[in-house]
Amino acid sequence: MSMPPYWPDLVPIELGGSKLEQTLRSFGARTVTAFHATLQAAGRLITRRDAVGGFHHCGYRCTQPSGSPLGVPGSGVEPSCS
Image (cartoon, rainbow, N blue to C red; front, side, top):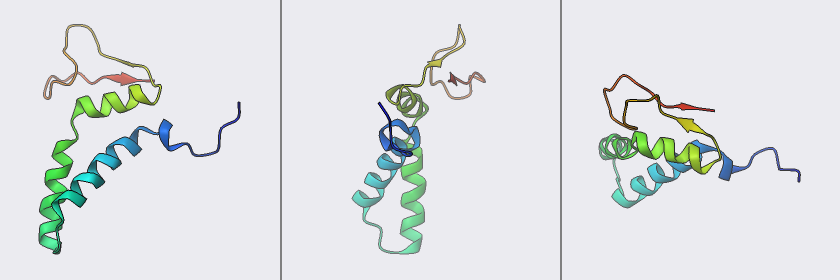
């Protein structure tokens, strides 16, 4: 089966971008200052678990080094996706 050159369902950043766009639309910022505040808030809504989940959804295999829970900020251990 051949696939087109760009397949959004297989690009993890599309999932994060979709969540970001949905949040920006729901806040409905109408000024530049409000938009910047909304963008910062929306960026914090995309968690490490969301990012790893996006990779899994797109068919990438992500592994977590043993002894460290997935998605713990500051653990110093990053998941590896391939």
